Image 1 (cartoon, rainbow, N blue to C red):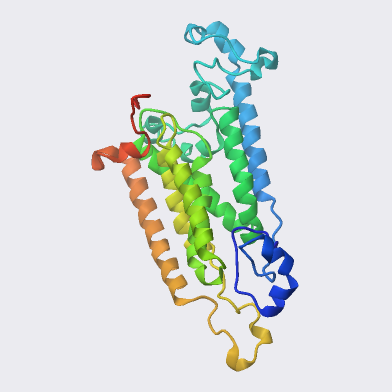
Image 2 (cartoon, rainbow, N blue to C red; image 1 turned 135 degrees about the vertical axis):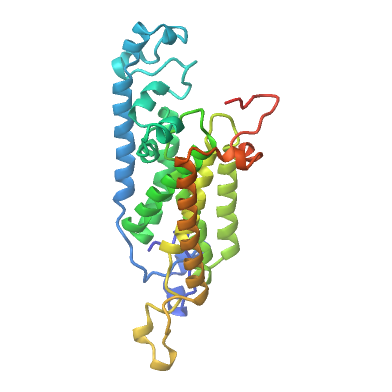
Length: 333
């Protein structure tokens, strides 16, 4: 692994410190060089898939055709970037993110409570993860995915990181559908917050192998707090963020365990000095607790959703987690 990796660190033998002195001085997060380096290919594929789905969405949207044949669209103004033909964007008054109409997103699988519960279209909990409301939305999410996801995939491989991404996206969709029932929701943000949550739990469960633990923890907490704070703005689905983060946080304890320090070198140590257990007792405890919470959480969430229950009925203040009204805006619907 590269010693400049900001997410990993380890207690190192003197020989390792001497051999890597130059690198260790440039980054406070030193990582064991004996760990396997994976090649990241799944995250780039996810990026390509999201971009391809957006192109398909714009093709289906066909703003010029809809703008000429639907009076509702005419009142919003003309299409943006008309030189793109049927790929041109909806009027900015309708969609300021340079993207398709809500009707096109709904047609292709946006998360919409009525269709999930009463239309028995549970597949929308998954398809909404691959749709984006506009170019700005897409770029923000894909840049975040590249920055976070590739690093994690290089550390843990495509199976574990892919699982965290997809399951976290589902968790975000479930929580979003429980609390936001009058609007559609799209985007990979829930899955991205799942990766952030997994990074945090990975740091905690593998605490003993990190150097500069406080700095790594503080950095992650600040990044997560800022991103969640942005979610209280209107038109941002913070419930998807929170649901994805909590799912990823629990999955990190289950999937991102590292062996305790010295396990990989045990064959070179004398018998009396060998590490007997691959993981520490607290890691097993966190694994079990996280697994139980995941199973219970998904079970309760899905049962409530398909029964048609509204999460706001059980939590009168929870709507403030997604939008806080101010003198500058009214959350409304």
